Image (cartoon, rainbow, N blue to C red; front, side):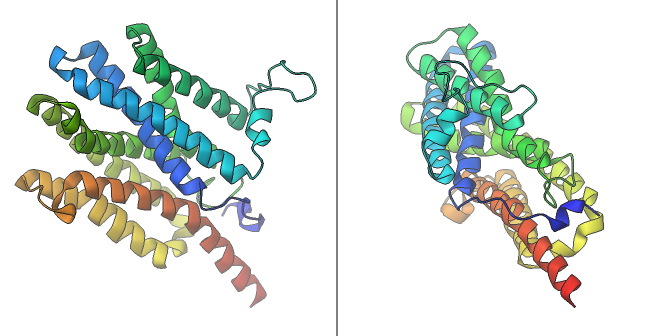
Length: 285
């Protein structure tokens, strides 16, 4: 059992949940856009442009959400530069927070350059950064001293797979308005289907690894994980794709994938506090 049962919760606000969600979509979108830029067809250009736009605005929104959550805008600035020795950089290679702050900044820069007409080199670099950003938040949680987050090595991979699937789902929703062809959309749907299968496998491994603290799932968080994330956010979209049904919000696989991806982050971030509450209650008794 993790010693993190006796630590306090981080001082995060609700803004951290959409930050994790939007950041995953932004990173996954750039990765998909870069993959199509390198290996796609000329007809994929509308999807590529949509992916770059989604990545850039996702990076902007993520930065705003993170800044609000930090409480003081200059806290993010201090993660990049030494306040007493500006313009000396603040970079700690051993710190996931410092490493991630710079990765997010460079990712946003690559997204901007790609959006205004970057080449394949920018696409490749941004794609690698997008791959990192999509899974970074999960890795960041694993290096904390908190239950669930620190008790499984699968969290980074889970967030990466979820970021890929939600990014593909978002592009499926947005790209048709930018002139995406049926072939490009079919590729996105095929990718999203495979990403959902991978996400389900990793989620099973993630929950199985947490067997020693399984009591947390005997709660509303377990119900949300099973019904909201697995049922509505993964299995239902797969069934809808198999049946070729896309009419209505609850019958649209892309919308259900997005709802499941958001719920996944809600469950992961908030269920950790449930374990602490149960442990403290048991200790008092």
